Image 1 (spheres, rainbow, N blue to C red):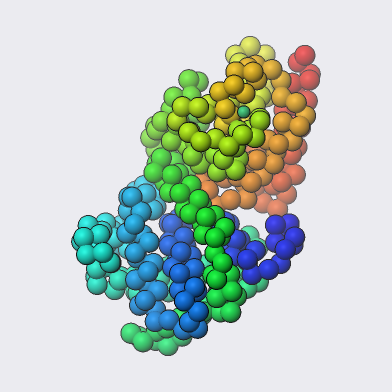
Image 2 (tube, protein in one colour; image 1 turned 135 degrees about the vertical axis):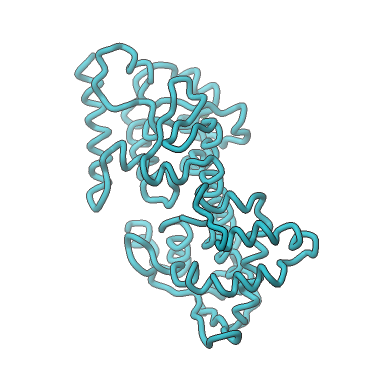
Length: 331
Ligand SMILES: [Zn+2]
């Protein structure tokens, strides 16, 4: 993975753990936040209960417990169910309730601590940040020098973690997580709704998620997008109108692979013109980022482009070249 080879440091391992891998819950973001906190204290060992309490506190502070998992996946014995029950009392007292911390102590060793260092595609990261020791109620967490080192100056890492958490949360909140994982999504002709096998939700709700894959910038001019609700528009890089000509035999242009966010002036100026070579290349790279992320949009990209497995990046590039050729053929 190039991202890692460029800079094989503990910070890169941390980024891989946070930015890649599978998200069926947002737990690793809560664990990461708690680790950065305890790492800053300089201590080598902390009680598991303290880490669990900080972990629970970060989850309590999210706006919606139900947005921490794909809809319909939280059972009544789930930690998130207990979080929902204990959240108000925890906020009122300024710290997680004992019942919530108890549940966290029970669940985090297997639910999240075992998984944090292990990535789906590349295996374990090269640096570890903690190790569990002891058993029963006396379990403790030994913090590695690497963790204590990166935690002394967590600035950018903390920001990245917060952004990733918000993106994954937004996708769960938009109710697209579960449907996307299985079947991908469609977006209707007016761009007013996102159609999933499960339900329909407003397309604006995925703007925040898409924005994250464009570094929060307009796809065309690169200006930072500050207000996603009004200034920013959804744009089809290959014009959607081409599909209405009756002669279009290419892939569905109304799919995530072809949708970007653009500022209003750029969207207006772009209109129905054909994308430049540079824009096509940028779209390939943007889709590569989505495809390498834990965000559920990845599955949509994979399904549309029929690109899973080791050669997926080449498939995505060929898919795009086929579209370009198709466009050339018909002009
Ligand atoms: Zn722009």
